Length: 264
DNA sequence: AGTCGTCCTCGGCCGC
DNA sequence: TGCGGCCGAGGACGAC
Image: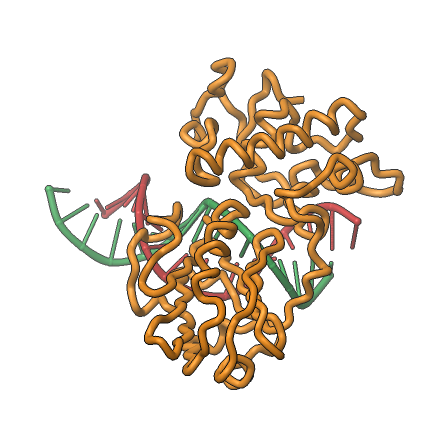
């Protein structure tokens, strides 16, 4: 599914859509809009104008519009981007892996005949004009040790503390890490995703390093699903590092796999 | 603040 | 063997 690495590829592809006058906008599925974004409003914001910049924060892609609100796109679980018939990725895990016109949720037509299309079979994605970018935490690809510390560091508040994984996946704390990346990062860091006790300074440094190196490595390999843990991420799977049978449970509401031997 | 249920569709697996 | 039907996967958000 599109996590931060995939959305960054979408953003790069979207640069091909910049500075091209928009002539038509189809928002085929009205329910695809969020925060009051309707087909009529989207058309009013886009037709006759052009995109000026392709940005990203976490998993949110942002296309600035000349003299207008920013166009925000969330890709959910199976969302894909197509510009002039070119797809950013060959196929997505958990998606049907093929392109069909009936799954196109919106289409932006350019005066030169090309088009930008948003394709989303399972429809978990959404479109939003002027999305609140400030609600998102610092971008995971840019996150500093200080960012990781403030997002996952010692909680001094009384009451329940969310497990580590829920905090890493909370887009308001750090933006961009999804379920598969989270499992891979904790596996590489040797940290138990369900842990609720505070991290010491060494552990925070280890987690920060694992975040950076995992993103870099998986990007080189081709995406979020290219982690070492991926193949074993099923009942009965074993730890690629020490051979122990992996444990699995719901952590922070998400299916989670981890190694009982080296993750603490 | 944290947790749970909801949205949506497809693939995989169950049992007849 | 074949097929109908059910469940679970994922990200984000609203409700408790």
